[in-house]
Length: 295
Length: 314
Image (spheres, rainbow over the protein chains, first blue to last red):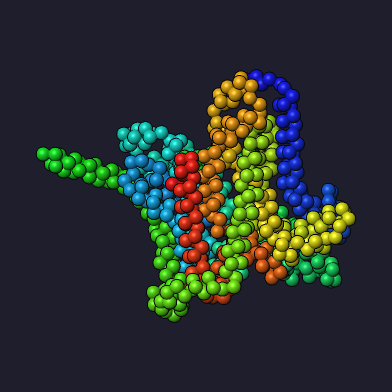
């Protein structure tokens, strides 16, 4: 279709582009500022000289961050929880979504009901807390992995993807060829479902990486703390470990360094997923869309 | 005669079902861990709700603790913070809904008008980025940016010749900070669902409208917005259903003794009463009150929108 060029259209486009550029700036600036503040001299940041460009470039903040044992342990724990947790999530999500996507599965409605009911009503904080302590997984690695083993939203997205992108005739044909349900799942359906699986890995991965609440309530052993709890101490509660600030003598200097450590830490904590998501961005629409509308 | 026919048919039906069950036994096998997970981690805690009506003691356990009827609830309703908690929870939610619900829709409509360009993809990629930042980091950013000594916002205020403001220590700023930081973080991400709804609108509708001489704004108003209305409705139902569910994390991280009068919500209260003050029964009662209200809200909104335009969640 060839669009007729008229004044209205041009004005619309100009305004649209200007507004969207404004949105772009508002979103980008805080992120940009964190980067320039983390590599600028803290004194320049304090004096308000760092607004558009870094000044007095230094990498001290990052050097100090990587010296801190708590941060390194937290980082290691978070990687562990993210990798193992996401693996459990993906398996459980497939195990839930595949049967639920099969129209010939007797009990499909009943099991859907059992799962969906939990969306509308839950035991709440304290009953869950009591359960975790009774199960004996309080203050263990399992408390980070098992209570959130599967998310219903993600099951719905995956189920809908399975049932809408795989024709009903495919399982039938496979069964005639003597294929079993599991073979069908692993050999045919999963290879066809890479887009939704990629989105699921990202969603679950991010939620583990950023998870803070379950660690707050289920852990009190510092050795098990994920990065987010350590971040909370530093970024929100202003508690710094001695190894980090020991080389600065004066209180003012310590405060200055503390500020730039915070900027650096924000980058270190957020970089991995901000670097990964653009790679599978093209699948987002598919992943989010299919699940929520047709569900 | 017919009765026998029905009998025979039922028998056939049952045996066909049984055959399906046997044939698909592997499906039950892989679903088993999921079912166990839901029973243990979602249904078992529901058993614990009874302590809302009891005086829980760790030694006696959930079952053994003594019943106290609605004592925990009346204590909550009669407390002097009850109205403040409800007000804070609802006002933060509504404020957030009014700001953060329409803006992603507008963003999606605007992006949809940018046809096939790198610019569109750039805006999308950039606006999604903040969604991947954790709540803790978000809270840290807010504290850094708003710091009265070194925060960039106050530096800009000083450049404009005004006095710096201590945003975090004044209760009146809390809700605005909460809502607009949320908007910054999620505006792009929330627009995805509308963008994809827009992409499924039949282009022929637009072609016909162009031939009829419809202008851009008219086409957006009469084709695009009606086209995504079902999606908007579902998202609105979900938003209203969660109106008493202000997310715990950000409020918890940003509240301090000076802004608590406007920053204490039900979820932070449940946490404090339960895990800091160890008043398990009371905390559970407050939580139960909250989830019952949520459920009722969800059912009401679902009913209303169902009458209005036939789009319901369930």
